[in-house]
Length: 272
Image (cartoon, rainbow, N blue to C red; front, side, top):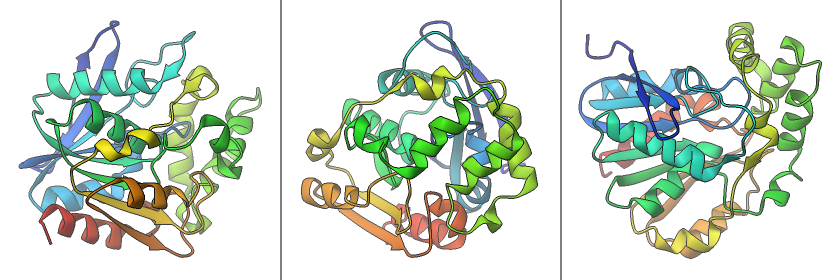
C-alpha cells in the first residue's frame, strides 16, 4: 500500500548509518525531528505523516545521527554540520532531488542550514519553533532546555524523568501518554550523553536573508525552548514568510494542534 511505512538505511561519510522511513507517493516532504532524548522521525510526526501522504505527498521520516535507528557515535561533538551533512547525504542516497523541509526545534535549524547550503534542493520550509537562530548560551537560559540537559545528563535517568522531559514540550500534559514515554525512553536509553551535552550549534540569524524561498512558521505562545523573538528575526530578514501562533501551546505545535498544523501546512504546500 502507498501509505504503508517502509524503511531503508544509508551509509554516509564517516561510516555512519542514517535510517530513513517513508510513506506515500508524490513530491517529497522531509520531516526533521528535534533533539529531545528518545526522538525519532516516526515518533515525532506520527500524527502528521499520514495526513500528508493521504494528500498526495511522499513523506520522508529520517532519524538524525544519534537518534532512532541511526548510528549513535560517542566521543564527538554533535555539530549542526554533522547533523546537516549526514542527513543531506542520506536524502541524496534515498533518491530525493528536491523537497520541502519540515523541521521542529533542532530539526528547524538543520532545515535552515540545508536550505542555505543547498538552495537548489529545498523548495519550501515549514518550521516549528526552529533552533539555531540565537547564540547557544541564550538557548541554555530557556527553562525547557535547562531541564532537558539536567534530566538526560544525570546518572538516574529513568521513565519518570523521561515523562517530565516530554511534559516540558507541551502546554497540556494530556499529550504525554504512557506509550509515548516508553517508546522514547527505549531509544533514549541507547543514546550517548554526547548527543545533548556535546551538541554545538551556530547562530544562523545573520544568514536568514539568504533564504529566498517561501517559509511558513509555527510558534506556540507558551514555548519553553525557543525565544518568541525568533519570529521577528524571520520577519525582518526574509522576503516571503508567514507565521501561525497559538496560545496555550508549547514546543510541539504539530502535536498539540495537529489538525490545524496539518491543514495550514498542506494549504501552504498547495499554494493557497
